[in-house]
Image (cartoon, rainbow, N blue to C red):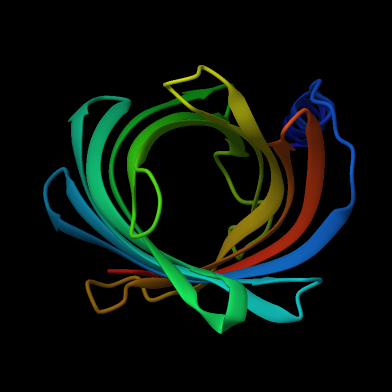
Length: 227
């Protein structure tokens, strides 16, 4: 177990110290989410998620979204999902601007030396009520232990994600993650829900604005129901 933790910390150092310029002022935010995951038949799963984001040093709600995604295990280690997200962003004068996002997600998952690896590739179409529609590609690589550290199955993880504009080929956002996920209630039966989990973590987000980069420090928390 100690060796696995050393590997995790080494991966964390590699991901968080990856080269990406960061300048400008920093905002502090808090993101909270509720999720429901359910297996509807063999190899088929559905997930529903709602998230609330508080910006301006976590003093006001700046964004909220709801998402539903249907996934299918196509082969060992690969799944394909389609989904839809509706996003609201706080604008000037207290108005909320809506964005719709049809999306498709291809995920590769494997285990090596007792460590989970995942490579998620998300393509989304951003449909704005005001403004030009756009495509966006996101790639997220995550590393986590395959076993929990405690009886509550507390699992540490690290991840990195990049956002790319397919039209220009420019990467305009990076995210670096570090956190813990765990099960707080496991009912051990085919009841509803059969388990409840939590997720706590930290995200460092860097955004490119013109020729400059600005960073954002984010605390995240989530409650997950598994059916």
